[in-house]
Image 1 (cartoon, rainbow over the protein chains, first blue to last red):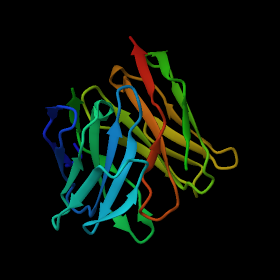
Image 2: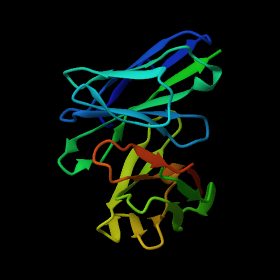
Image 3: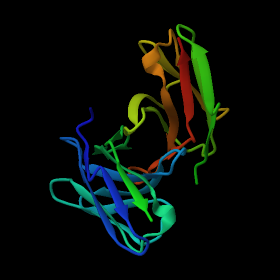
Image 4: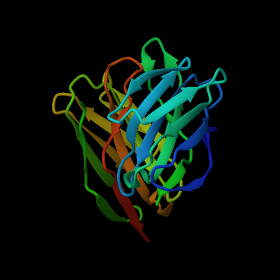
Length: 115
Length: 114
């Protein structure tokens, strides 16, 4: 077990709705990254948060947004849900050091289904 | 951006035999290459990683090799056991400080035949 927790485990939403997913990082880690994993594919990087600010972003539209809190936990928000947003959403925590952030430890994920 | 290709997509080996999974990457600036194991219904688990200043790393039955010139890296599992059955992902990370996420391959479904 990595110590990274995510909630909820599963979620069903309707197209056009908004969703918030939550992540608690591993003790001692100050950085949280979010990934989207479609069925049968590898995870795709959405964005990373460090010191409560977005620190890097992948190729995802602005309707994907996030927050990081002082205790390093994080939220992923998705507005105007589309059918293609159905996926496993993974949170990964890591320690950002002077040389960069390397080992990322994943939580179990939240399975989002958009109907 | 970075692109990671992974082969094969499915690999079936007899219990006790070795398994090798190969990946190539496109960005010569990438400097970190982890491997993850994902079991059904779970998140990816980091099993081994290697940085660009090292050519090989071993941890018990698992080893990773890196060829920076050819831009490819491989995972080697020896003496495979039933519990090694899972989907394995390779990934690469650029050198943009902490701001770069990992770029993953599409995964290899490893099946260990008893």
